[in-house]
Image (tube, rainbow, N blue to C red; front, side, top):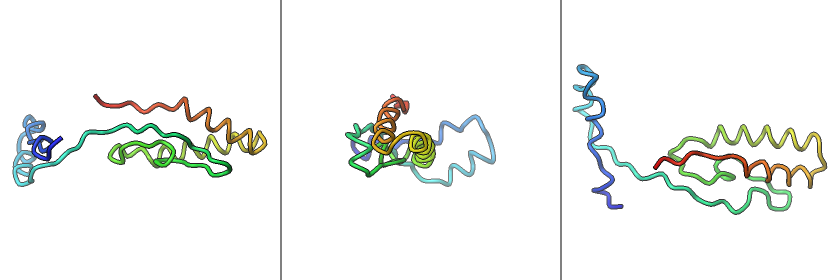
Length: 106
């Protein structure tokens, strides 16, 4: 996608808000957007190394999901590590990650 195609006049979405919002928005420049992309993550556990958050759930950083997913990952790891041997807990963590889905805007 070219930069020109990604640059939109986004201010018209707020036209119905009236003044002073529209006056303020008239002073703002153009916004540049890029499409949100999905990335297939090959693994979250490699040996005894565990990825969490954005690292485990490769996605566009503009979705602002990293901290929430990192907390969820930490909870899942805590649950599995407290009840299973390490190798089984990491396998369980990997299995549970497969059930996490992030909606993709289309």
